[in-house]
Amino acid sequence: MQNTGRATAEKSFIVEALIISLSNFVVKIIGVLFKIPMTYILGVNMGIFNAAYSIYAMLFMLSTAGLPVAISRLVASANERGRPREIRRVYRLSVTMFGLIGLFCSLLLFFGAEAIGNFSEHREAALAMRVISPTLFLICISSAIRGYFQGLKNMYPTAISQFIEAFFKLAVGLGAVAVSKNLGASPAVQAAFGISGLTVGVFLGTIFLVVYKRFFDRKNHPIRKSREADAWRVLAKRIALIAVPVTITSSALYLAQFLDTLVINRALMGSGVPLQTAEQLYSAYTTYAVPLADLLPSTLVYPIAISILPTVSAALAVKRYKKAKYYIFSSLRISGIIALPASLGLAVLARPAIALIFGTGGVPIETSSGTVMPIDVAAPALSLLSLGIFLISMLSTTNALLQACRRSYLPMVSVSIGVVFLVIAEIGLVSVPEVGIYGAPIATLVCYTVALALNIRFLAKTQKLKLEFFNLFAKPACCAAFSAAGAHGVNLLLSALIGNERRITCALILLVAVIVAVVIYVVTMLAVKGIRENEVRLLPMGNRFADYLIRKGFLEHHEQRSSRIPDQRTL
Image (tube, rainbow, N blue to C red; front, side):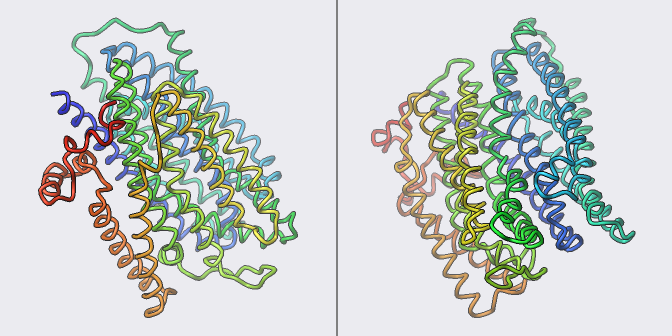
């Protein structure tokens, strides 16, 4: 019965992660569809839009991985102990506290937009920043509601509200920027109109969450009310102690894109690059490379972190420490198995991926070494950023695990130290003429590596775990390398035969390369027994698939190998 309960609970958090994964994938696809025509409409002025958009990107990640994480942990703990009154208190306190903080930040951004634009050498982006400033308040409100539902293991409100935000960002934003361009508005005004869709989308998404919660509470009102609840002051202190470190961690972790806005142009110009060229290099990097690098981890791995936190928190709340440690190992393994092939695969397929979505055209960039196209700048940068997909995926998962284990301040420490390394590396590397714009992705990798190393040390020490990355990920890493090599071979062969300058040929290259890579990865993982029975059973129709693989000898039954991996099975 205990094994059945464990399997049910673990499968539950995978189902929850799947809901968020599908939502995030749709949202990211809409985001890409949004940026393609926006790039064509704004052209060389896309950097103005990106400077303001980088603030929204950080805020969006804050809303999906920051504040809700803190609230979901408290709600999950109270729910596991059967305290509906405490759940309501946590929700009301979080809405009040974060609503006030969000209002203050909105006013700060609105009145400080010009100063930010002047400092970052993106003066024309000030108007767009003012247009987007209300989202700070709205995101804080929606974050509290999302965290409430995530703590109750209901991921549908988060998924639906994210879709509403993305859809209206696309519809309103593109419509507004097209109208403004037809009216002959300046580039700054066009960018402001384009980004207005974000504000409208976040507003409507928040309205949906408020209405949904009202109907949800009526339908799920407990018949027998428990009067048990901690005092308001105690809960407020607990929310602050959890939420502040989580908020700082999430905002610091995704501060990289905002720092790009502040640092890149100034550093490039400091090395002798003209302002127009610096703006074009910044635009190529932030428009083509950054969104694609963020696509895979945000849709495939981040949802695991969101879903595992209330599961681990609930287990710890009732002092089921062995179950909590088992979930820790499971989430780390699953995150790595997904992230490794995605990381290496996108690294070798960067150019056709960019060409498929954005094309190979654009305004040529005049550099000291000659004229290059935007894709020629973005493709190597994307290859570098892709190597960080595994790092950022594991970092997000370990952040969530430390937060679930009531060590919220530790991710704040590790990520803050990583950001310090990021700033030093980015300023130093981008300023070197031989490195230039590629210093930005290299600095990002440095940040992720430092923060992840510290997180692993903190998690192992505080939870008394033996986390050996070689034992956990050696086989998946080797299999991912073989699959990436196969994808690279397909890319080289088809590029030589049919070319890689048109979208249709790039689509064919990616389709064949991805199929070959997936087949190689699955076959090699089964051949070396790199995936375990419990991990297969978490998949859709996983029980039937696992039984078949065990009969064929591709999987070992866990009872046969429990003595060989006691750290995962006997915790």
